[in-house]
Image 1 (cartoon, rainbow, N blue to C red):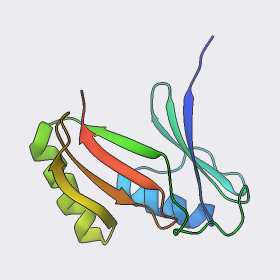
Image 2: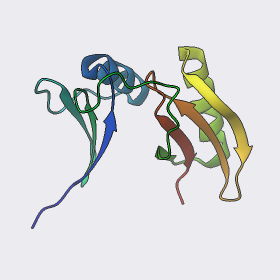
Image 3: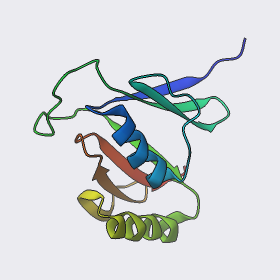
Image 4: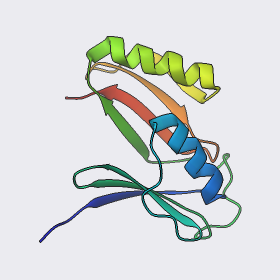
Length: 121
Protein backbone atom coordinates (compact mmCIF):
# COMPACT_ATOMS: atom_id res chain seq x y z
CA UNK A 1 0.00 0.00 0.00
CA UNK A 2 1.26 3.48 -0.87
CA UNK A 3 0.59 6.10 1.77
CA UNK A 4 1.24 9.78 2.08
CA UNK A 5 1.03 12.03 5.11
CA UNK A 6 -0.82 15.26 4.33
CA UNK A 7 -0.42 18.15 6.74
CA UNK A 8 -3.46 20.40 6.38
CA UNK A 9 -3.36 24.09 7.27
CA UNK A 10 -6.74 25.80 7.67
CA UNK A 11 -6.81 29.19 5.96
CA UNK A 12 -9.35 31.88 5.01
CA UNK A 13 -8.31 32.09 1.35
CA UNK A 14 -6.77 28.95 -0.18
CA UNK A 15 -5.46 30.63 -3.36
CA UNK A 16 -3.80 33.42 -1.34
CA UNK A 17 -2.32 30.88 1.09
CA UNK A 18 -1.08 28.77 -1.82
CA UNK A 19 0.71 31.81 -3.26
CA UNK A 20 2.28 32.46 0.17
CA UNK A 21 3.44 28.86 0.68
CA UNK A 22 4.45 28.44 -2.97
CA UNK A 23 6.69 31.51 -2.74
CA UNK A 24 8.05 30.50 0.66
CA UNK A 25 8.88 26.93 -0.36
CA UNK A 26 9.67 27.53 -4.03
CA UNK A 27 6.98 25.05 -5.11
CA UNK A 28 3.97 24.97 -7.39
CA UNK A 29 0.70 23.35 -6.31
CA UNK A 30 0.26 19.69 -7.27
CA UNK A 31 -3.54 19.59 -6.84
CA UNK A 32 -5.94 22.56 -7.04
CA UNK A 33 -9.65 21.91 -6.64
CA UNK A 34 -11.69 24.82 -5.28
CA UNK A 35 -10.76 25.70 -1.70
CA UNK A 36 -8.19 22.92 -1.23
CA UNK A 37 -4.70 23.15 -2.68
CA UNK A 38 -1.80 20.77 -2.07
CA UNK A 39 1.94 20.80 -2.57
CA UNK A 40 4.03 17.67 -3.09
CA UNK A 41 6.85 17.94 -0.54
CA UNK A 42 8.55 14.72 -1.58
CA UNK A 43 7.94 10.99 -1.24
CA UNK A 44 5.16 10.40 1.23
CA UNK A 45 4.59 14.04 2.30
CA UNK A 46 2.17 16.71 1.13
CA UNK A 47 1.07 20.10 2.41
CA UNK A 48 -2.57 21.08 1.97
CA UNK A 49 -4.12 24.52 2.46
CA UNK A 50 -7.88 24.35 2.97
CA UNK A 51 -10.41 27.16 3.15
CA UNK A 52 -14.11 26.88 3.87
CA UNK A 53 -13.64 24.41 6.69
CA UNK A 54 -13.58 27.21 9.26
CA UNK A 55 -14.98 30.57 8.28
CA UNK A 56 -13.36 33.78 9.44
CA UNK A 57 -10.27 32.29 11.02
CA UNK A 58 -8.68 34.96 13.14
CA UNK A 59 -4.93 35.37 13.67
CA UNK A 60 -5.87 36.26 17.27
CA UNK A 61 -6.97 32.68 17.94
CA UNK A 62 -4.16 30.80 19.71
CA UNK A 63 -2.57 28.16 17.50
CA UNK A 64 -1.59 25.03 19.38
CA UNK A 65 0.28 23.30 16.58
CA UNK A 66 2.92 24.21 14.09
CA UNK A 67 4.37 22.99 10.85
CA UNK A 68 8.13 22.42 10.97
CA UNK A 69 10.37 22.84 7.97
CA UNK A 70 13.49 20.77 8.70
CA UNK A 71 16.44 22.08 6.70
CA UNK A 72 19.80 20.54 5.88
CA UNK A 73 22.93 22.60 6.46
CA UNK A 74 22.73 23.28 10.18
CA UNK A 75 22.74 26.76 11.73
CA UNK A 76 24.00 28.45 8.56
CA UNK A 77 20.97 27.23 6.59
CA UNK A 78 18.55 28.16 9.40
CA UNK A 79 20.03 31.68 9.47
CA UNK A 80 19.94 31.96 5.67
CA UNK A 81 16.28 30.90 5.62
CA UNK A 82 15.50 33.42 8.37
CA UNK A 83 17.14 36.21 6.35
CA UNK A 84 15.27 35.21 3.16
CA UNK A 85 11.90 35.03 4.90
CA UNK A 86 12.50 38.25 6.81
CA UNK A 87 13.35 40.03 3.53
CA UNK A 88 10.08 38.73 2.03
CA UNK A 89 8.14 40.29 4.90
CA UNK A 90 7.09 37.01 6.52
CA UNK A 91 5.82 37.57 10.07
CA UNK A 92 8.54 36.42 12.46
CA UNK A 93 7.25 35.35 15.86
CA UNK A 94 10.63 34.46 17.35
CA UNK A 95 14.05 35.15 15.86
CA UNK A 96 16.72 32.44 15.61
CA UNK A 97 17.59 30.94 18.99
CA UNK A 98 18.93 27.68 20.42
CA UNK A 99 16.08 25.40 21.48
CA UNK A 100 18.14 22.44 22.67
CA UNK A 101 17.81 20.58 19.37
CA UNK A 102 19.64 23.29 17.45
CA UNK A 103 19.12 26.75 16.06
CA UNK A 104 15.49 27.46 15.18
CA UNK A 105 13.07 30.30 14.49
CA UNK A 106 9.31 30.66 14.39
CA UNK A 107 7.25 32.44 11.75
CA UNK A 108 3.54 32.73 10.92
CA UNK A 109 1.52 32.59 7.73
CA UNK A 110 -1.07 35.33 6.99
CA UNK A 111 -3.72 33.35 8.94
CA UNK A 112 -1.49 33.07 12.02
CA UNK A 113 -0.54 29.41 11.54
CA UNK A 114 2.92 28.76 12.97
CA UNK A 115 5.85 27.66 10.85
CA UNK A 116 9.07 26.57 12.57
CA UNK A 117 12.37 26.25 10.76
CA UNK A 118 14.80 23.88 12.43
CA UNK A 119 17.77 21.71 11.48
CA UNK A 120 17.08 18.24 10.15
CA UNK A 121 17.79 15.82 12.98
